[in-house]
Image (tube, rainbow, N blue to C red; front, side, top):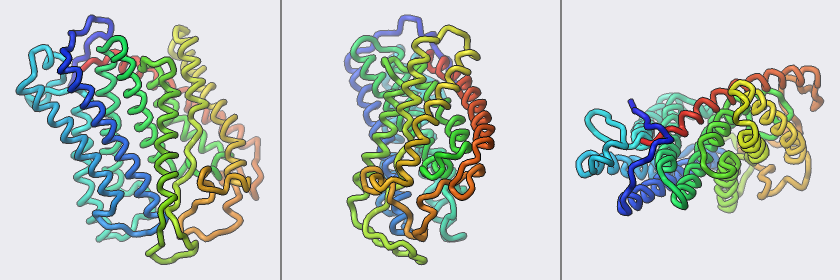
Length: 397
């Protein structure tokens, strides 16, 4: 759909007015992205703490505000560029159905439509089949696809202008790009959270395999395309900040379960959980990309896969032990004492889960074999991330 300009070519100079409007659009899309992921975490906490919600529950409203803001911002950008933009401005955009707009705007518009469509679809699904028993029901899959598209659109929008800008403005847009990438990582992390977020799973190789497939690609692509000194690390910090700040606020509010069976009485909103400590592997990825970017793509992918897997394991194995078994973690800061009202309290809360774990004891032979598979997945994911990041460095539309 798009014809990309060479990243090394001299970009057309933007006028001050166009720069200000572009910056305002990026800020609006970042606000929309933050609303969406914060609303999603609130929605999950609502289900954990209260139970059945309505079509217009507060978390749903926040999510749809984000979708509306993204759709209106990007739709207005497309209409303005098509009918009022200069020839130079239209030349830096993507043409679709006769309209002109940045690539990121088109992706976000699609995401906004998907999110809006998912609302009546989800309401019909609940009326027909009752409560969801897992995160990825068909309506939630459509909703999640729309959310991810808006996060991706925000990242691409900031990326295109980052690649055309210079000096201080480029640094600001690079920071916006890294934050948008962090929101995308948070969204992807929520999609796979059933397998990675619970610290009781951090002693199981399957968790590292799933994380290696998803996060290695995202962090490597972010690190290669970003123009900050530490782009992947900055994105990981944004991911953790979004998760932690949202949940630290949520757990301060009272909540009462309203749907039986209630086997764990709650008085306040429950948190979804402490985020993965992606700052450590992200820092390693940035360091490898800075020092070894010219050794060949497959060799670099192998090194990045090893770096990600080794740092993930080194950080999360002791962190899992701390969050699951230490009394010091059972508070609202580390969010380790939060479980849904429909999960009965018991000794299982201090146990680890996984195919190689029996009676809270890890079979290290089976774990080592699982980690070898996880390492292979991380290497392949890193190779995809390198290719994606190289493409993103050339995006200027």
